[in-house]
Image (cartoon, rainbow over all chains, first blue to last red; front, top):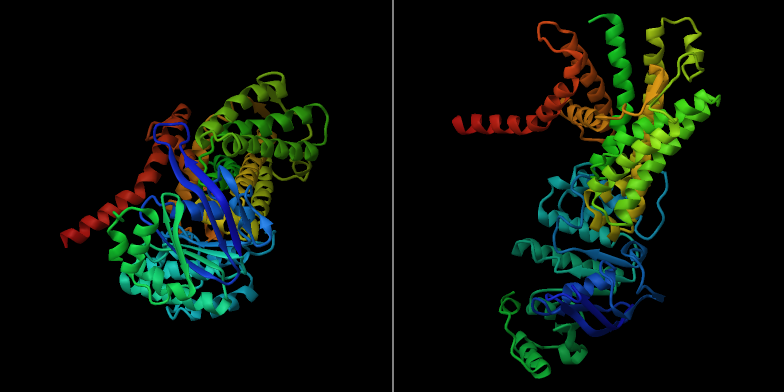
Amino acid sequence: MIEVSDIHVTFAQGTPVENHALRGLSIFIPEGEFVTVIGSNGAGKSTLLNAVSGEIGIDSGAIRVGDRDVTRQSTERRAGDVARVFQDPMAGTCENLTIEENLALAIKRGSSRGLGWAVRRQYKQRFQQRLKRLGLGLEQRLEDRMGLLSGGQRQAVSLLMATLQPMQILLLDEHTAALDPKTAAFVLELTREIIKEQNLTTLMVTHSMKQALEVGQRTLMLHAGQVAFDVAGDKRQGLEVKDLLALFERNAGEELADDSLLLG
Amino acid sequence: MSEIAFLGAIETGLLFGLVAFGIFISFRILDFPDLTVDGSFPLGAAVSASMIVAGFNPWLATALAVVAGAAAGLVTAWLNVKLKILHLLASILTMIALYSINLRIMGRPNVALLGEETLLTPLENLGLPYYWVAPLAFIVVVLVVGALLVALLKSEIGLAMRATGANPRMARAQGVSTAAMILLGMAFSNALVALAGSLFAQSQGSADVTMGVGVIVVGLASVIGGEALMSTRTILLAVVACLLGSIFYRLVIAFALNADFIGLKAQDLNLVTAVMVALAIVMPQIKANLIKNKRSAA
């Protein structure tokens, strides 16, 4: 579970380009809930994920992950509790390392690293098992360099890496946005399966309202650094994109200017 | 080329293989262009030569030289990681500072080791021809250090270090402290270079404050040359390539300076080196262009 309480983030503070990206944002996600987040460009979606993962510091407020206060902790200290898949397929994996080395790096997320061999025989079997379910034949290519894989394949491996070890929260940062429609659908389906199987607490940012309603159990919309609306359960059942728009206009008091949210 | 000139080239090539290992860690593994080596090489020489002259055991002197090198690497890494100084500039600052420090350590611009007991003295007493002693000893050192380097880079920490250089954001997301990896890697890199400096001083019989000039270029020539010579697909191959590159570089230099028909003299050494490095860097590009032209012509 995670609890974000009243966080503020300002970029370039005290300069003419100052940007108050998050303005007193609060979210509570109980264990096992799958939340989707939408919002137009600049609404603060990525900033929220970066704040939860620790990549950027916050001005005020608090962030709790599991039963720990991580507000002042670095990304690597939080990594045991916070797993992440990036938007850019190149960002989540290391192209110069082999597939098995990438997975070996991920298997140590949250535990200390020593001088023992990184890629051990007992890991290989586990890696092959996990890779097999992708149906991409990657289980035969453990020693191939990651750079040889396509964007979709790399994103699928990123997802496996993020979910190899237990975590308190899984962050998905528009992780299908950079893929072609067919591959995106494959990665999204894989995401749903894994989240369901392992009962993961998930925060998924998406650029598509349709996707936001189709997957997960709860949908948040961010606007100008705050939560514009938050729907779950019965209220969310049967909602369509146009209902979301109406909800947004009522709560934020303005019309949505970003077409791309509707087109996705 | 005479046997002595050949063995001399092999000896220097082996020693600079250690430098190439160090530069491989900073430039290739951590993606950290590190010029500290121009200071840590003479630092290793200065520490061990001063201690040997002062009557200390050569083993202890060499060990302390290695520690001093590691400290120099830590300073550069710290300037970059904690004080956020650009990596290249951080290493130049350390290198410049080390010039003064090396003068302080030796108390004068150079220290002669003639007649002193060094690490090589016991071997010289075995009755081998003198020009065979150093190459044989250095082969052992380089193989041991190379094996340790491969083992380190294949360990969990080594993997974290490689990820730090290749994709720091991803490394942090996997719980790797990139700052710690840069500190550790730079310390290890400069420790190896200081070891090379220490052994170089002991085999050449003196330490000199200017002996570090251009070490970075020679080391880079070895790393890049090695990559041009052979595949570096795995860590083991990459480390072997550093060593081969270093020996190959020395042999080419020895040949170029010995071949009278080219007309090169000893003072042309740095010019030859610079040309070789430039060639090694653009070679893959030229090769790719040639292949492309051939294809479009066909």
